[in-house]
Each structure stands twice: as C-alpha cells, then as structure tokens.
Length: 224
Image 1 (cartoon, rainbow, N blue to C red):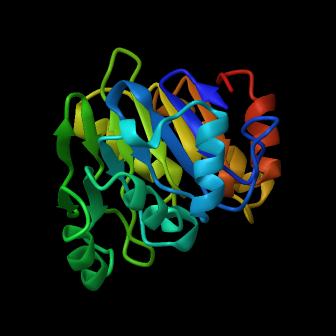
Image 2: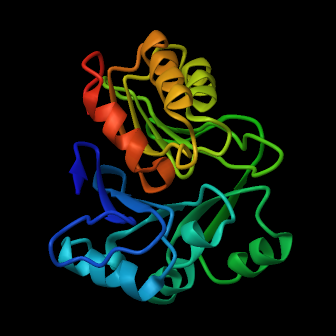
C-alpha cells in the first residue's frame, strides 16, 4: 500500500496481493531512505519488501516508535542484512537492547521526551506517555505529515504535540490510531478533534480497528 510520502510494508491489513499480513506495522520512506518500525516478523517483512521492490541494502535510517514486539520484531533481520544504519530509538527501549544495538549498527541516536529534528525535514515528537512511551515521526514538508506506530498516547494528543513542534497544522496523519476497542462515540470525537486541528487527510491502519477505519472513510470533511 502506497500513501504518497511512504509505502506500507507490513500490516495486519493486506499491503499487496502477494504480501503476507501479520499483526504489526512497518513503512518505508524512500525519499529519506528511512524504515519506520519493523513489524512483528523479520522473514515476512523481508518477503514483503521484496514484493514491493524495496531493497534492504538501500536503507540508511531506521526509526523505532516503541518497544512492543509488533514494531521491533523484524529488527534483527534488517540489521543482519544491513548493519550500516543509523537508528533513532526511544529512550524507553531497554537499556540492554540499546547497548547491544550500538555494537551492531553504525549509529544509535536515543530520542528522549524532548522533540528534536532528526535530519532534513524529519522530526520526532519526543517520547510521549508514561504507560506505553512512544515517539512518532513528523515530516515538515509542504504537506505536513504525522506517522504514528500505535498512537498509544492518543492520536489527537500526538497531533497536538506535532503541531507545536513544527509551528503549523499537520495536514495528514497516517498509522496506528489505537482505536481498536473504542466506542463509536470515542472514534467520532477523535475525528472531530483532528479536523478542528486542521487535519485534512487521515489513514488509520494497524491497531486502529475496522470500525474506526470505516468511520474515517465515511467522514466527508476529511480525505481517507
């Protein structure tokens, strides 16, 4: 599945006819040579990358949102084939894992709660939340985009932070919105909140849930 700025490689929804679907999420931003999360299974991620014409050796950066297995499960498989990587990892990741990663790749940059510029026009929101600390990725181009892994902190809350980081509205939000077990009322409140903040397009996937995806598709004020 391709969404302008990025290509979804791994999802619990079908990303291509010949791709395998498992629980988890990963996407590739070709312009930046950046892999966003690694899904739950390395073999499936690599197979899907091959089907979608993404060369693992061309990746230069890897952005990890949080420590859950469905977002770091393919990490070893990627590093094994391409250790020449710069990793952007959240400070909430295991200190032992971070220490090991530093011996396996070119560079590991540990992102804290403070938002920061990564490179080019890419920013991290900083690590948000205490129960499930997670960072999201902001692309500060003409059409500003926010990419979330699971959105544990609340996609509307993450969007609010992202707006503050770049000093303008976020036009498009993509990724896991963590609405899988939410009521229609909660989902509709989330949609309203995003629209009020200036979001013009939204593409919920992964842990957003079928009902949330359905309601976002039905919403005429926002592009799916």
